[in-house]
Image (cartoon, rainbow, N blue to C red; front, side):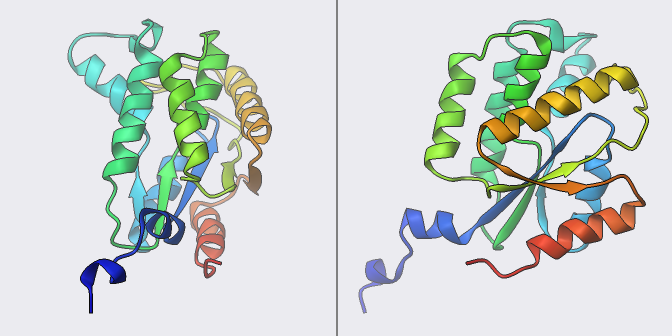
Length: 197
């Protein structure tokens, strides 16, 4: 048997991998849910923006999100992580996607850069992410951190921009309302555990 005829094509490999996104406002509990999903055995990919901020702050830059290159750095890391994620399983769960970065650019009043436009075109054309996106709703408060300096009222405005952005790109939002962590993680898992098409 010819080995080449038995290997899946790129399209077949892409279609067999289901990549889900967790999105929502800062402080809504996405990271905690992601960690629960990892404990359930799902492959997870952490948020890029937090990593970009933490790296810059460790080098003495207090507010890296204020510089012009911030959005593109987030997009670049998101792309690296998506392309570098293991293909061992059939499901991956991402804490945010470039569509969140699009919402972030909108929120910050920044233009959508050529790099962000190109990445959105790529992931749309390749159908990288599932059309169902988990929208993790606000917990009713927003606890500040070094990387998250946003008031609760600002977080609600940010939540609305994310919702508008994902809907504009044609995604179906699955609401995960405020609640206990175990219940929220179980609600996400119940959807992604369903067999693929």
